[in-house]
Image: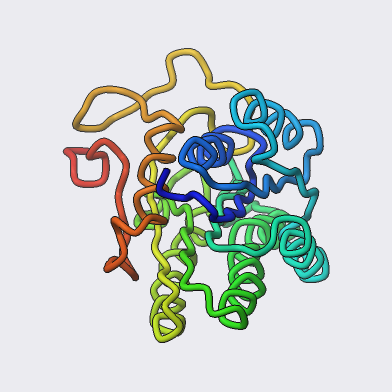
Length: 249
């Protein structure tokens, strides 16, 4: 019960990693703001949490890439749940198949807006709340191994995730004096692909442990980073990738 009397806001909590993170926080005593643009998915996560933790979760529909929506979200969570102690910036979309030669400009802007701008906006307005209420909170951003290297089948996603990494380090520098820790948890091919509901049969994984990562693996790492067990950890990049990044490729 590391998060008893705490409130956690999780974006993209309607599926995959976001849903697992929300459930893990509820299991450890937190109240959860389940945030998603897809109402059906978000309410499904809330219903699953409520089965074992009645009253622990509430759904908030929000386009976290839009400033006005995020301001309204933060105000709503504070009003209904009493504050925000933990922010998990999880939501992301990706591009696939195109190269720099033929990628549509609207795709470039949309992926950056959802995957990178959302981290800035949510961190800004939740951070303002944490500072104003003197909450020594935690912000955990979900990165990707794609933020460290180029990919032949995606361009914008890697650019956005590399931006998340350095934004996290800069925010840790800026918010540390307020007692707010900012860290990044970095998966590789966990659960279903970004933006997809179902994991394809035979999805190829290459890592040192020889198994696919599960959303619960990431949720456990996020819970650690949000807890007092990581109270002296900030500006860190935590690889939770089965050794993919440092393995033989």
